[in-house]
Length: 208
Image (cartoon, rainbow, N blue to C red; front, side, top):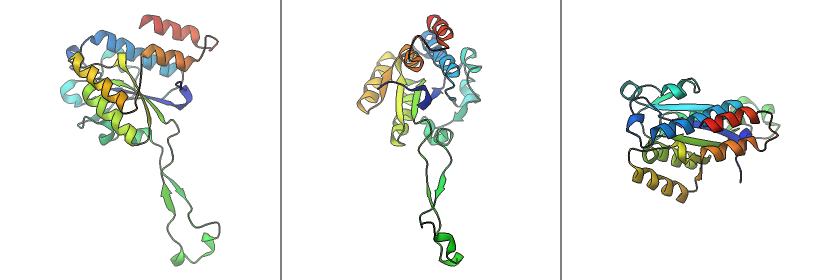
């Protein structure tokens, strides 16, 4: 199973100016996140971002800020609990449950139309951020519970302690999350060296 760019959305979690200095190997984490965002723009993949209490932890780091829309600011560690699902899911659709003759009935005999959520147009979430064992982990598990397919980009994630990020990746894999690296995602999105944007992508990859 490979990543299909037409099925993906990219979510970048909490790369904030007052948080990143505490993250192990922060420079690498930011470079890999930047690669993901650059590739997503190149491939027309929607990009979303979150911040955790921006008034305390600050905005996105400058290396990423221009590549993301206005982040969803949250208090919950699980971004789904503070509105991420509403961003990723399409609006609900009304589907008739009474057959084609329902409109011929008098209004007082008609049953309300059933409202069923549509499946996401892009059901694959490529997720990266900090901290791996807190906001990334909790968001990923809730996305799974909401029937998204979740891929976590391990080298674009980080925690203050390596043992915490390692434990997070073990737990994510055990729950069915796919673990990839930023280069794996980039090359799978491209599909081959004949992609029209291959030269530009290669420049991003080499810089990361």
